[in-house]
Image (cartoon, rainbow, N blue to C red):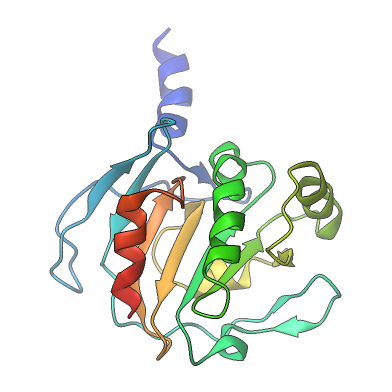
Length: 195
């Protein structure tokens, strides 16, 4: 029974490790770089996540990822307005659970904030397109980063989903590790911090 708990415990924390080797999730603590606390978020549906300001003020990385049509893309292509960047994968249950509300947020924030969902699937476009079709995700472009360049460049330990809010100057405001409901009132208040 105890070995089963060790296998299940990381999943109960609310995120998925990267498909390639990862080192787990951080424990709640005072963030070293910004001095602001980290704290837990829990949605009505039971999704759990951790909000952290640890990397607040850090510039968005210049890592290349790919659009649905195969074109090279960088976060700097979306400079000038706040960005919400979601790193996710089709094999990650919390990632898939939060995607419909992230898609709705993209429609709601159109013209005010850019919402970018970047798949970390090593298999590339096929599983992402299939998931977007079956889940009826229509407001997000299926960006792909099968080399995990962006997740490596954002810094820190990455578990999926990880979502990072950048202000209009391209500086990190906060990041959430784990799944959330993006239509939650508490989340709406946190998104206002990019202004």
